[in-house]
Every structure is written in structure tokens, then in C-alpha cells.
Length: 387
View 1 (tube, rainbow, N blue to C red):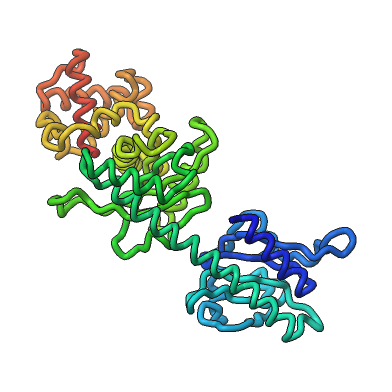
View 2 (view 1 turned 90 degrees about the vertical axis):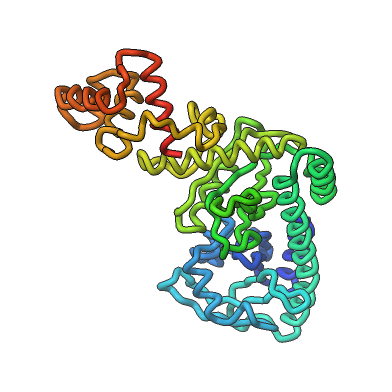
């Protein structure tokens, strides 16, 4: 598919005698062409916006807003856009909307110049964009099919329904079904957000996943299936998770499951990803760390997220939760393996103040902080309370 886009962009570049760039409707770069004039196109033809698009494969929100202000989302034909040095647009552009059945699926861009392409050349280029539109529409439709089947698999109960959903997803993915993937969960995912508009480079599919049936309080989440090169190289999944959290204003958190090959273990991967997202939200609220967590690095949260809520909320911590300063003191002390000096430094208090607070913790909970089992109970109960 990528080769098809490149061939069509090269065809437009040849027709117009100028380098053309193809982006989808989310302004993500798909292909770019260069008009060869002996030694290739002149670097002066590149302005900051085009350079960024080629190097990062995506335009900024400000650039997108600037161009959309010229009506390119509704245009039926070429749109000429003047230069805007303040926005980093040093060269005027011509935008050729890529449409299929009345819907814009992307844009072909070329730098405008004098005398510029003729009307006949632009008409010929628009005929090529129609072929691009067919490909983009087909790809979008296939993506919708994959998202629907992915959601069905993640929500299907064990048994024949899950087996049927796995088969349907395998058919929708084709050869990609047997590749190495990581599943990402973003929680919560606003009901007003459209998953299909949140595709991130490297993702195979994204879909919104409702909470469990009968649990009206459970938030909707987003699932993203991300292609990987190796089980250890989780960079693409981490990048996708971070960008998806950013799209909802950073209000949520994301979890990344252990990498798996094929589809058979996707339900287990989804449990890991949702648990990691819960842990990420808890840790972020506690210490302000990044809102993305890997299942493989959760530590005690791997056990705690598997516990029913009524079991995880041990009554021993209730008196402490009403006194946040004492609860934090106890948690930091236990996080520091009971090392008073390290805990006092982390809390920014005198060691004698720490000892006094720990004595109050013992009085309120009835636990003995010299007992390993009591320490374990208190530590796990405090962590569970964050979930």
C-alpha cells in the first residue's frame, strides 16, 4: 500500500514539475516526492513546515489550524494558500484535496511558484488524487473493520464467542495477525472522543472499549494494538500511549501489556494493559511520574490490581487515610525499605519528626512496624488504596 501511495505522489510531482507531499486528513505524512533536476530538488524548496512534516511525519496543531482556515476540508478543487512567515510557512502552497465519494481523506501539497502549474496540469493531478482517495477510503474502511473486531474480542466472554471473535479479527488483519504486538490501554477515554481520529503512527488499530456490563461507574477505555519489531523494543507502544494520553489533555493514564505474537492471548494482554493503566494513574497521583506504565515494571501493583475492590480496601488503613500526612509518611518509610534516614530525606523532615509520626501510625493502626508481616500488610494496603 505504501508503495502505491509513493508511486502516485511521484506521478503528481512529474505532472506538475514540482515536489508533492501527501498527508492524510490528520496531517500525518504518507509519502513525498521530489522533482529531479539533475542533483535532486533544491533544499531551498523546503521551508520549516515542509521540513518538519518530512522529518517528523506530522504537522503541528497550529499549522493544521492555519491551513484548515482556508477551507481545504470542504474544497472541491485546488486551494491556493499564501505564505505566512509568522507561522513558519515561508512559501505559498497549493492544496489538492484528496476526496472519495464526497469525503476528504487527505491532501496533496505542493509549493507554489511563478508561473506555477497550469489549469490543465492541476486537472490532471486531481485525477491522480481521485485514485489516492480510493486507496485511503479503502484503508479507512479496513481500519474500521479491524477496530470493530478488536473491540468484540476484548469484550467477548470466554468460550465460543471469544473464539469466534478471534477468528473474525484474524480475518480482518490478514497476515498482520501473526505479527508481534503490544496492547495499550488508555483510561479513562472520553465518550465524546472519536477513536478512529486518534490513529498514531505504528498502531494497527484503535477502538473504544466500554466498561463491564452492569458496572455503570466503570469508565470507557481506549485500546490500541501496536506493531513491534522485538519483544524488548517497546518504544513504539510507549510513544503511542503517550500521544494518546496527550490527545485527551493528559487527564488519563495508559498501560502497556507484555508483547505477544498472534491473537490468542489478547484477552490476557488486555487485562495486563488495563491493570497497568490503573497503576499508572495511582502512581501519577502519588508522585507525579509519567502517566504511562508497563505491566512488566508494575512490581506489587501486578498483584494488587488482580484483587477485588472489597478485598483490596483493608480496614487497617482507614484511620490513616483520614490523615494524609501520616499515610504518606508511612508509605514513604516503607518504600525506603524502613530506612529512617532515607525516608526522612525523601519527606524533607527531621528524623525525630519521622519517629514521632511512625509512632502515631502504630497507634492508629494497631500494627507493629518492627514486624515484617505488619509492614507488608500496611504497605500493600496503602498501595491498594491508591487504586
